[in-house]
Image (tube, rainbow, N blue to C red; front, top):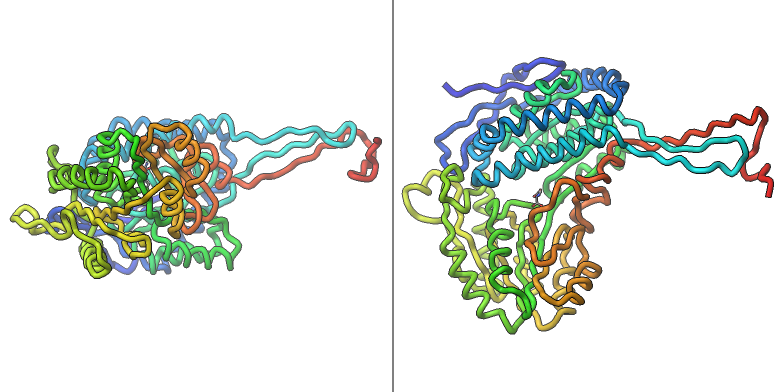
Length: 496
Ligand code: UN1
């Protein structure tokens, strides 16, 4: 009997009022049904928002260092249960266990950072231009935040949003991806066990077009944080703009790794294999373009193809597997479609390009690690996000051209350059038009205590992670205290 999971609304685990559920399956073996999760009707949202508003009233008054203790405890619980949670995640979304362990670790790092931030949340104290007057800024929580997250980092990405939001004194309505609801239930349980007052978190499962849209447009939700496709982000942005909501968007990428002729080629090779095929290419930071200097192009491609071909494909729960399945059929179809597009545009499939054959792959959404060569700058595979294990290789003649190619796409999340030339490294840091540039490291692997985000169509100017995210989840307020005992007029009674 398949288990029916519930929403967490108004402090209890409840069934969806409409009795509708979405099936959650293991993408490596679709006959393995993880469970049935609510397909929540938007009419249930009012109750959740009212509860979150009550949660906010109390929680926002708890001193921030005390709020931090709850997050410290959440970090401790995640550490204790890392293995269990990693297995749940791999089963429902497919990436290999080492990576789901890393996913939990990213959440642990974020929890501990947030816990300590409860003792900081710095404002500024500055001199007043008038005598006997004090001037300062400080940060206040905002209210209920809608948190809408993707499948590819089922715990890490929600933690980037939820921990800082809570630390700052907000409450949350959390709508996880319908492909990874089990990890979300586990995560909310951890928060509750850590001592979060129950009304501070509302978990509503369902589809983006229904409940996700309802959260984005609810007048009782003044802030939103979304990670996902640029298309969805744009439509949330339109709603947020109309309704004057605070909004953080993390969206698509078309990240490039550049390899210069002076690079350590073995290191660059390891980097691109991890960047392009780790998480089955399903990261917004994934390496989707490989830019090779013409002098090393042919040799590098040959070595890359040999290595890519030998990556072990399979169920991420098995230790020897390097690359798991894609999240669902549509994701695999998209890879197939892009390989067809690439061929029609004149590129060559050097390896992969199709589904693996064999009984062990029959029930999963597998696609072979794929290397396309001869990709030109105007090809669709050089410009559009694929979100799968499909790598486009482009050849360049000099540094200027490599940088131009890197910068000419719509997106701007991460970039990477392999070189031993210090001058080229610093030029890359300055000139590559991305939120993150790596030197001698792949395009994936951002650390939780630094700001994370991208430029152009990747984001809307905010950053997650590190110290900057605490600005997003708070509103700055300024206070002046005049203890002169008389009316002092700023700009007018200045005595110089
Ligand atoms: C994402 O793909 O949405 O830098 C996040 C990285 C990870 C986070 C990726 N730490 O690849």
